[in-house]
Image 1 (tube, rainbow, N blue to C red):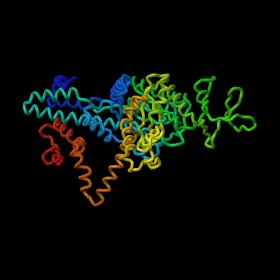
Image 2: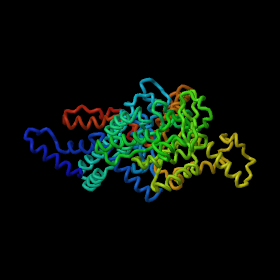
Image 3: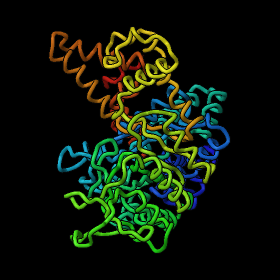
Length: 530
């Protein structure tokens, strides 16, 4: 419905009520357009459709990969999308990522926690709701500025500008984008996963990422000590998330099945096998075992029968069982195929380094069974990107027989190599990593999990060094405010960002000429008008 049609609709509604003389149709239409999403389920359905279209576009052409950055606060997510619209004119292909790591580290009532599912699980859907609250305000703020321009054009009698603005309002692109939300390992059994998934979806999540680690032993994907669960346990949780989507009417909700098997050498359970070669038997086949030659040596051990012999899985003092070294990639491939065959839409393979050939090798095997398999990939700050790609270039040059005597492989992180041929080639590979991996390794979505954790720390460190040092107030003005003004950063007008101008508009709607507004001549925000 167009802006003018919304006004006509509101006018008809008001006209039906003989005692609503103080209500004007145009403010009603504006308030309706400024908040088009009334519930989290409205958002989930809207964003699921966006993500499905993007997945189809990627299938047609891998150049259509998508991206996101991790968020730990609504303001951070809002500023990302405002900046994206400012620089690129559209939010298409850009999402937000909600990292369980950042919730644990920055949003728990216990204080900073490691990424081990110890934080309050309800804090994750609460953050989803918070992110969308801020994104809705970004819509309201931007549309509010357009309405003010419309009023100005009308006051000046500029019909052409009024028509241009009316068309812009009708074609307005919302800041509401998909959020890929991290549910860790489900925070419990399949029923707990289902209940929490409902909260995610009701808050607006169209895409839920779940991993195959043991819930009560969960570790960060880039740390040691990861313990996986048998496939049937993981598939039950995938089905639980799918049932939650279907129950709430988000029929095209997206599930990202994450496998940590590449770096996980442990399991807590021996899978229950019904017959040779079934999924449980395949899981157990990766266990590190030793043949039982003396029955008397068994001490409450589980034993496996293979080819008429008994084998004892090696058990650690922690009561965990270990997999054979070198089986990680095979386990990843089996995890991914079975997840896609049982309700997942996208895959996440947690790796120990950003190496396209390694990822592509696994994806090629998965696609031999499921041709349209595609990944979400963690462009993690846990990787030393500079060092990894300099190593890759060094090793490639050495394998080609090129002279690498000018480079010390153990010192490649040094600033001394920044301006060298090796440093520049490594940087170019980093620059094109996402495009190249989308084309070669089936990566539909690239994300950085913790970017604003690091940018907040870096910018605060720089400000503290300057402000509390010799620069004093100039440290803030030169390092922050002057850059905000010259780069057109919206929050330099922080009163406007916090909703002051929207509040003024509402006061005028509600009280007319009697409204006491904050945006008058003495508002210091006017100093930033230039």
